[in-house]
Image 1 (cartoon, one colour):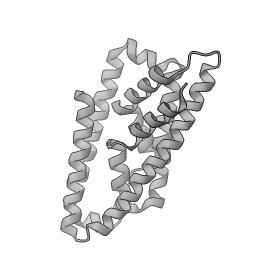
Image 2: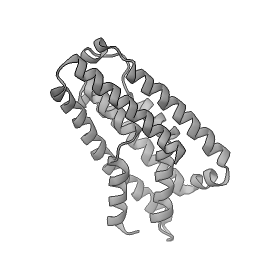
Image 3: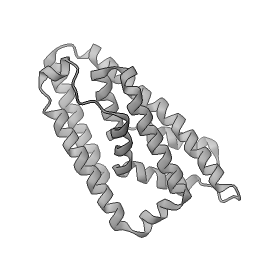
Length: 196
């Protein structure tokens, strides 16, 4: 395995906007970076586990049984569509006070399981970078570990961006507009992954 190209791929896959990134940003905006760390860890650990599982052979099941992949994809898109509606319709009062709807570690992990972007990324990692050596499983585990560290750093950047949003958008009206923009971005990212 060539480490530098893999690390670059993992960085790009983790830093580019997607449903998890947008939800991390929004959660950090409401609850702060410290309270968003569990969701970051939950999402990153789940995504890394998917890389490991794909490399260990489960990715082949998704290739052989497209119906399973299709059902998972539709479940993910529908769930993300519902979440985007929740973000879009949040009243102004919820933006200035602590909302009870927090993006938890479990929700972040579940999002990775149903997120088509995560599975396509994991399959790409395995097909492009998985070594064909005698220690392939060990090497794939190392890839998953590298991916975990990079994705945590990238999602922390998104969390810090969410904290900065509160300083930039100081009025309730501006916060509502930003919240609705993030809801539309979440919806678009969910459907773009499905329609691609």
